[in-house]
Image (cartoon, rainbow, N blue to C red; front, side, top):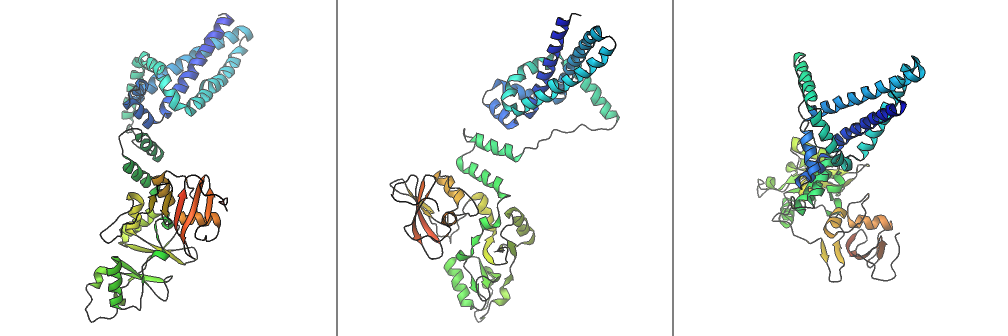
Length: 421
């Protein structure tokens, strides 16, 4: 065989090997949810990909037939060429050269490239891959049948298709649904909360200690009844000495069983269940379900009480705020006529960004008050201004302990505001 013709055959075989090796990996690496979404919107290439992936054994058989055909052909031609040049030593030279070329040019390099760009290339390579599929189908069908019968003889069961979808793929599906009418905004927000639920810490869901309504264990039954009537809570935390020492809680329904002459409710106090603020609420929810504990006391690394968390607080991380007949419905933010926002400083950063389309950064804090304190590293005074990334924040109400209300200007409007502290 002439050297020129032999070189063309070898290069063609290596090119075919590289293309179809890459095409196969692109097909299997492409994001299935993106492909399905494109197919539902009329993409012919995506529809073909799904059809091919429904027959994985035949597809692998077809590519295997082609793979062996081009490798054997290329190696045979290379061997003949090198034998003409070098005699018997040419066989070993051809074997070494073709092994290196097949592994690098025909396998590793194309598979790496095609896998990195699988979503973009899968819709292109599907057409030549489909042609090979049908051209090699008879041989591939025979191979798969032989393998299938051999597996039965040796008692090996064929694996069922794996329906597992990763969390990232589900999140992608939710984002894609935003471009159509599959899910409304509330449904998308709830699904995102579900995705983040397992990573949420107790400190992000708890009621901070300064907002906890509690009663000392030396209080009278009348005081307990008054607290229950005034706030409408079904469970009241009980402390000894000061609120930082919560020792248990009382169920409002147990109070109904007290005789009018009784002066103490200590026998109704149920022991507190303590949890660290860094615990994941998904783990805590399982404990609550297994042990029947509706309320937990949250402590920091030093053992100090920092708040409480209830079953309702944990569920609100998924479904949003749950209001009952005793809750006083409060607007956490208000859109003013000049385009600025008046926001309750207790409102969580994630909720603000989601509701108002802002981009306030998150960090080791959950609320707008926490963000301001983190920026200033001190307690601000009423009327103080803060600039951050194109936003201007004005403290409208504050005490000597915390920030209560903030006005947010999407663009700087008042003059003389300080830069980030």
